[in-house]
Image (cartoon, rainbow, N blue to C red; front, top):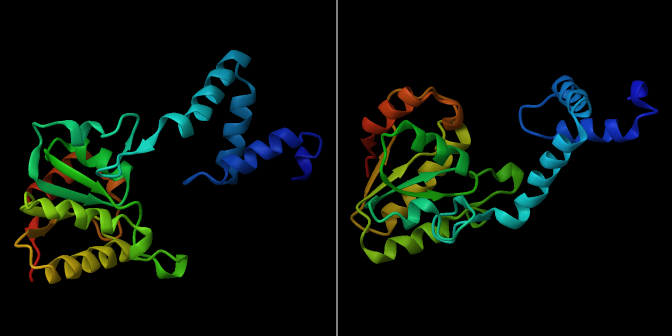
Length: 205
């Protein structure tokens, strides 16, 4: 960027901010200029918070949710319904479902969706860990809560086929009305998401 030829540090910051999801070049530039206008102590606090993330945040060894303590809050909470597992793509989707207040069972975070073009197959997702959790015989329902996108539907269909072949006598359900095709759970309002959870339907064998 020629206008920032004499500001390589600012240009580098804009480049890094532009790599964040949903942040384009203009937004990245606005954020960078906003940051450099802040007091030094505030920037230091922000930098400290970011630098601590790799040390403090980890994946729950049971469900894959982001946590600072293992197991995570949801897995450690004995009051939650232990016979249900809601399978989501990401920890952000889990957070959205939890905010709706319509679900009180357990979770399982896949860590993405099937995407052959990006080199993401079943081995790159936490599918094996999900199957391991079913060995207890406690699970009676699995809610396939992947996003209603092409990749999300493909992932749900793969899980449906895989779980059906195991003949575990577990009900497979999917969020029903309320979610737009191609939408994203993380950006769906709480009321719509609650309706989708409550009106989930059983998947045909």
